[in-house]
Image 1 (spheres, rainbow, N blue to C red):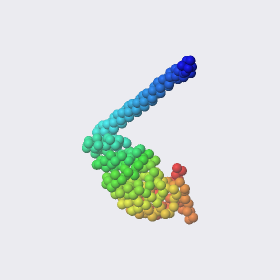
Image 2 (cartoon, one colour):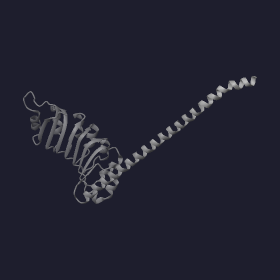
Image 3 (tube, rainbow, N blue to C red):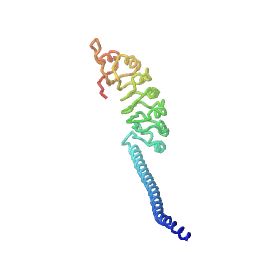
Image 4 (cartoon, one colour):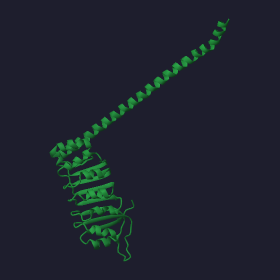
Length: 258
């Protein structure tokens, strides 16, 4: 009698196991399929990313090669945004590298391989457009004697950048669209060869004049000011005051709203 009672008591537990068991198995399979799905998704994403990077690399290489072909044919004398990995290939063609006069650079310029661009034998002009980490690049180009022109558009300069610029002893033309503060330009004081200077400053004031006077070959000066102080108590515009202080230099002052 006792055995029958014990068997009856065990029946609900067996029924629970029979109910829970399939549920646990179903949950396990769903978990397994979920993990496999996530792994598959990650794999596909990596495959797509690798494929896109490969396509971008191929397109970039084709563009670099097209520029080299145009250089060989004498159709251009510039190179636009050379990829760091391509610099060695460009320099490997000595005749082609010798035809590069102008460089157009933008984006991140921190890669040390870009420093080899100083080996371009006839490089005279560098145009920076929306450039980042340009200070590192300027440091690697420091003192290159062939550089005669530098332009910085949508590229903000600080004192360290100006100090690097001053190392280009044959620099004749400099355009600076954005400067942290005018005092940063003090690194150019007494520059021996600068002839044309164009820059934006926060305000026009007489404190700028001695800096410009210290440049013995300055012949063309353009100054854009955000806070205009053109009129002095004597009634002379700042432009006229510059012209009087720099009699051998063409001076222009305009109001810059940026």
